[in-house]
Length: 181
Image 1 (cartoon, rainbow, N blue to C red):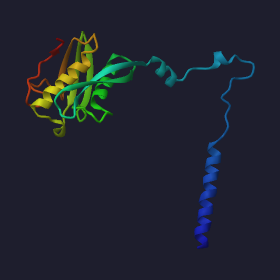
Image 2: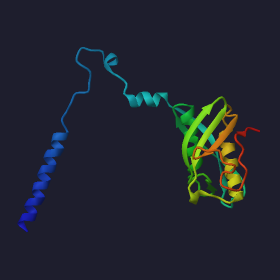
Image 3: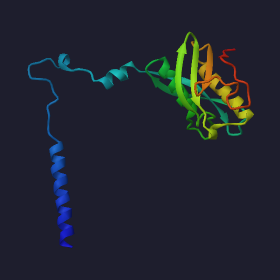
Image 4: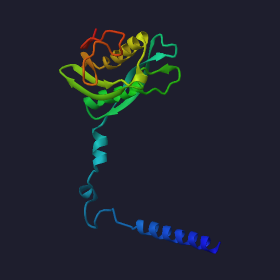
């Protein structure tokens, strides 16, 4: 019994010693006699935050009956157009509303590429993400409506594992590219 108490005391003492050694005080203030504004260097994290943009976007989901598209407003933060499209896809995948369903939530985005008005999205569709004909058509409509809100996107080429399939999930014909109407 006494050995257990001594062991607990020893562990506590070592913990205090380690915590005490880890809290060494270092001066982070400017050197005396210098101008603090000229010596302060912005950190990379601050520079990254300054370069990021925030935008409110419309993301399309389906109702719980899987009969029609419904739009929802989301806010994304991104650093450039490629990142904007990736974050938009993430918003399309995720949904925090119980009355709306994301048809893209189990589909993985492999890459995005935007060139001369065409957005190329390469996705991976696991078996559990496959939908019936109606779901597949609604998923394509949700994707198109969501990405065509960006004026610069004139067409979308949807690839599956780097290839251009005739159909996304085996039911509906998939145009390469899908053009803005």
